Image (tube, rainbow, N blue to C red; front, side):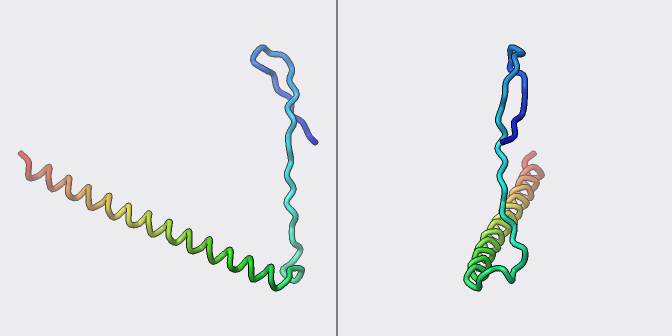
Length: 80
């Protein structure tokens, strides 16, 4: 395990361990089973659907904000 050294508030030397996480890499899609590929495709579809929902929510919010701004502008013009 690697470590990182820092000074504490009272300037004494402290030893802080640094944890490294290693992610296994696949060499190619050919190394994967058909079930694993189907699973990854399903997960990708789910994540794309969630992302699409988030984008639609953002567009809806932006549209509502624009409508509120327009309404406020109209109110400022009509109120003396």
